[in-house]
Amino acid sequence: MKIIYLCFISLISSVVWGQGQFKVRNDGLIQIGYTNYNILTFGQGNGATNNGNFAIEYCSTCPSAGFNFWKPWPTSDYGNYKLFIRDNGNVGIGNVGDASAKLWISGNLKVNSTTFTSDQRFKENIQPINNQLSNLLKLKTYQYTFKQSERFIGDSLSVNANKEYHPDYNFDSNLHYGLMAQDIEMIYPNLVAKDENGYLSLNYTELIPILISSIQEQNERILKLEEELNLLKQR
Image (cartoon, rainbow, N blue to C red):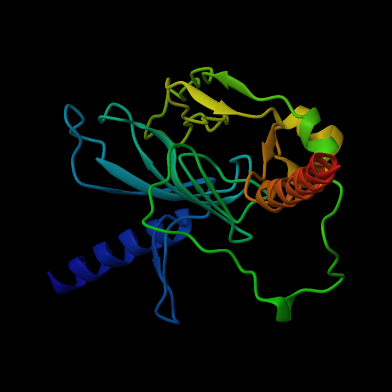
């Protein structure tokens, strides 16, 4: 009986090893598969007795290879790229990330506060910002709503699952106020970035020093006009 048991274990081990589906390596690391879809699922989704409620995988056929956290169909809120960590370390939340950003979030970000690296000791080629009022006056402001994003559907737990990437920017339907990146690009091109899909984003934060400089410039003009007006009154 013991010999039969050992033969059975040996047979199972050889099949698992041969298929490369699950391995406990000699160095103690646990490895799952060598194929394009190496999936590990957790929980049980509603109405999906054979599917997990959540899944992780290493996806080499995604738009960028990396570690993918996703929800298999037909669980609630199913879809790809709930959290995606690229091979180069860039992270996407709600998307597959982007080469131009360490973190890309599809949706709203809520924080208590933010700070930006600004220590003078990190900076060089420092020059004052002057004469920006005329450029600032060229900018057009708009109110707008975002086009509603097309959500990715069709995920399954199958090893043949479609991993075609549909960018999901997860826009809300609220009324917004802002600028157009295409307009800014003509005046301040260094404030505009382009992602892998060709879409533009705008660095609103670095417009603040330009606004401050323009207010100061305008204030100097006002003070000069007031001085000239007082001189006229004294005559």
